[in-house]
Image 1 (cartoon, rainbow, N blue to C red):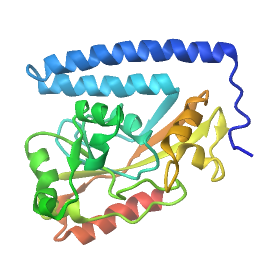
Image 2 (cartoon, helix red, strand yellow; image 1 turned 135 degrees about the vertical axis):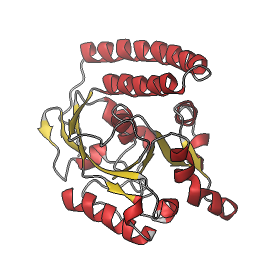
Image 3 (cartoon, rainbow, N blue to C red; image 1 turned 90 degrees about the horizontal axis):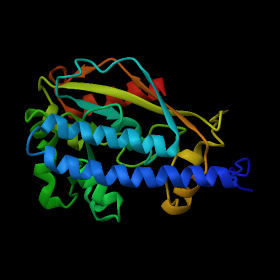
Length: 258
């Protein structure tokens, strides 16, 4: 029996969703056009458009975000490091943080999602060995140019019950560098007003061999989702002589809190 049987969608609910979807599509087209113009005038304004899009997406899916703690020195370019449960993490974090996500190159070829990711300033990582050297310095290179970066070091999504082991290769360039690293914990606390226990987590968490389309359809059937972002005490790359210690410290902080 589906865990979503408690969700009842009536005619009015469908009508409301379709109206919101129409508004969402219209505003998205406008925002893409506006961002295209602003990126030649103001980088900061262009990035703000991306943040507005993520907020618009949360409005469409009925996600409310609670933020606990504060991003340290918000105007200083930094690396945000977060656990990863679902594709929903992107708009949840993107609506709160002004930064560029890092994603695997394959996503750039996905229909719709790939195009929106490109428009949203995503940095795509090619995992081919020919790009290994470039990948190792990419975070430092972009932060040096004034961009904050949002990284999911698990490299994939988890089941929402545990935090997977972090991959350390992308953190190589931050060893002994004066770069702020802000660990974040993202969690989903309730759906339709019900606390999200371990049996309901797969409704939000998208992992393993789950098909995207049916999972997304089930998410869109929900009346409300509550997400929580917690900012943990920041670290500094200059305090670490190697990426392994840095990775362990970040994973321990996030896993311990989660």
